[in-house]
Image (cartoon, rainbow, N blue to C red; front, side, top):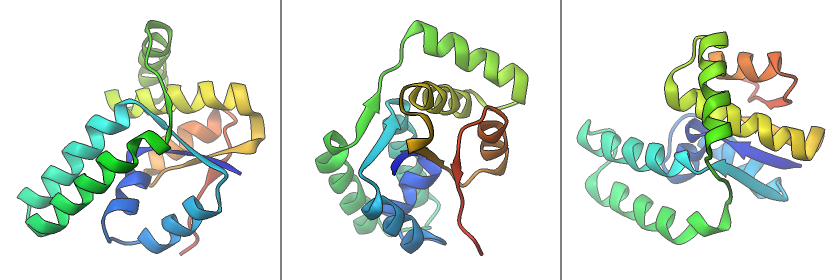
Length: 144
């Protein structure tokens, strides 16, 4: 199985939070992990916010960022282009999504077109998962 991970899934690989262990298991089982290039910005911002909000200690955030920098090239990255951004805008209107969530969904949709059902979308946002399912993208979800 190939995973397309949005930022909510990726952050669980770099910090310890609810479902982090499950997410690490899924990533270890996957043959590849695909991400949208926008995930770099989102993940850096998320780690910085976690530190500022006191959700992680400074050393934990610094270590997570160092790991991210070292491992980023191991993710297969879906590039952003004009067509993808146009699609993201249309998906934002159709599903009422936030801007970066729409970019994530457009990237996952394009990946699904190339990979078919060999790819699963991994995300911890219900609205984004619902939109992916509406587009016929297989969604991998944790069972509580």
